Amino acid sequence: MVGVVVVSHMNLAVEMVATAEHIVGKFERVVAVPIALADSSETIHDRLKEAVARVDTGAGVLVLTDAFGGSATNVALPFLAEKKFEVLTGINLPILIRLQSMDRARPLDEIARELRDYGQKNILLATEMLAARRAARAKGKGRESPRGGP
Figure 1 (cartoon, rainbow, N blue to C red):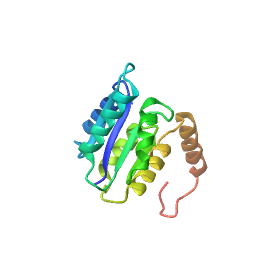
Figure 2: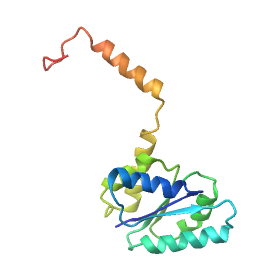
Figure 3: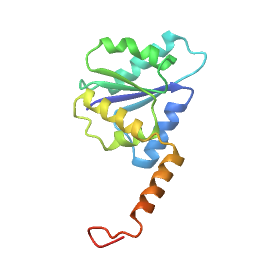
Figure 4: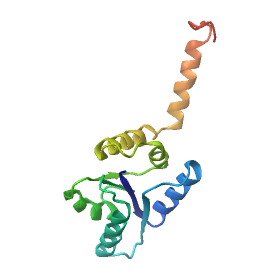
């Protein structure tokens, strides 16, 4: 099973994991690592290394971070030199919710790509989405569907 470490500034990682677990149930092999503003790179590295060791079953570890270029990501990037390690930046709640229903016995790279794509797909502008729905409804009015319904 691919292990997952969620790393963020302040308590975002902890709260996002807690929120996702409230919605979809307890995660297995998922650890949240908060980073305080005063934490040194060495401290962050040590916490990340410890978290990776806790979730690593040999199938790989996916690190989810809050922002590319931030401390969490910058400290995680050197781990990429290790086998079976990936970093996905820009974590959002839909990614964590999707994670719970995934087969984490699949290859790490497949899981990482699917989560990236799912997270991107779930970033929307509400006005655009609602306008598209209204346009689709207006286009369909006055016509009968092939099944005989509206």
